[in-house]
Length: 373
Ligand code: ACO
Image 1 (cartoon, rainbow, N blue to C red):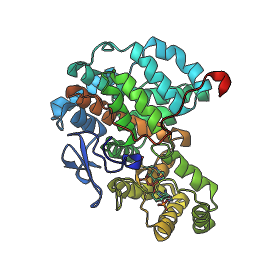
Image 2 (cartoon, protein in one colour):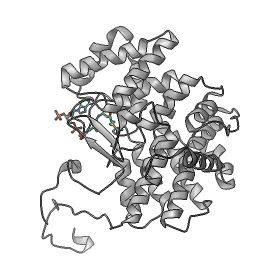
Image 3 (spheres, helix red, strand yellow):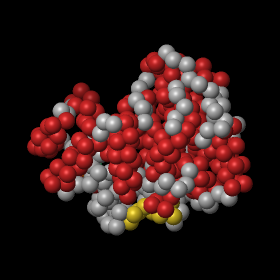
Image 4 (cartoon, rainbow, N blue to C red):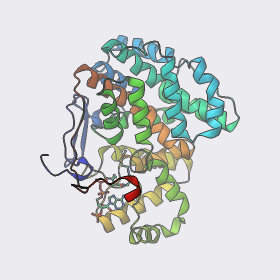
């Protein structure tokens, strides 16, 4: 046994990746060397998925071909279709997605191959299917019908269209697309690590994604965005500072704040704050935005913590008309591009991920027959 473990593997480098990089001190994030500030608002989610899956920002022709593949990938298999109603009745959104992606594996034409081209095809299909699964799940549980995907729409526009049932405004599409860009990949976060551990056994991409969805679900990771909205909704607008101080005094965490890697503002939060403000003002009711600003000030004053990606994502999604319990599924819609890219990368240069542990239990115990214990 070598060194003492670092609790939560903090600062442990667990894999090499060419997909994304974070400078936690400077608050910078890069996808394949491109600064997130250069990408956000200028590059579509489809371009980012191409960058992650295929290695480059696409040319116009490459993007058209890639988008055509994504549009084809929106079709769900018969097994998935048949099971949506019962799953929607019995499972919460992230549980349902975990189950539905697992079912989709059975119908994937590349299910028996982990080679790079098969993985790239599966990555595109999973990225195309995830928003459709969320929309179909939501319609099934609400007892409503969902409009057919519009082939003229990209992922962001189509998702808003299918979830809200109305054609989104251009600016709403741009804002939601930027949200998807901002959430696409983030180095060795918990769900990506889970995906890579699974893939490193040479298990298949769908199994790795099921592991990732289960990991994203938790409130310390992707589940935080939903909790942010529930916190805002539980506080009286004039009592934000007191509510935050009370929570902290009770030793509760304030969801949407703090980060393992960023020691300053999360660069994604910078964009999300602006978009939240813009949407709040456009709607003529900025109550939740103002409450968020106040919460941000108090948490910084009390704990020196900055908002993470989940904090302002919550109000952005709320203002876009997305139901609160679909916020974490929305995260998965975007992160699917990153997870699948990590599985491609892991399989391309694989070694089993099998860390050691520090044994802290009893030693030299004497065995006794059952009747003498
Ligand atoms: N509210 C109050 N206190 C906090 C918060 C918070 N949100 N975050 C950290 N702290 C405090 C802890 O209580 C701890 O204090 P202590 O040293 O006095 O015990 C200290 O800061 C360090 O916190 P840890 O939880 O040990 O930090 P860690 O790096 O393990 O966790 C995490 C990072 C999980 C993000 C944490 O900040 C947290 O729980 N935040 C709230 C949940 C959240 O927003 N998660 C989303 C993260 S982004 C993402 O996954 C997409």
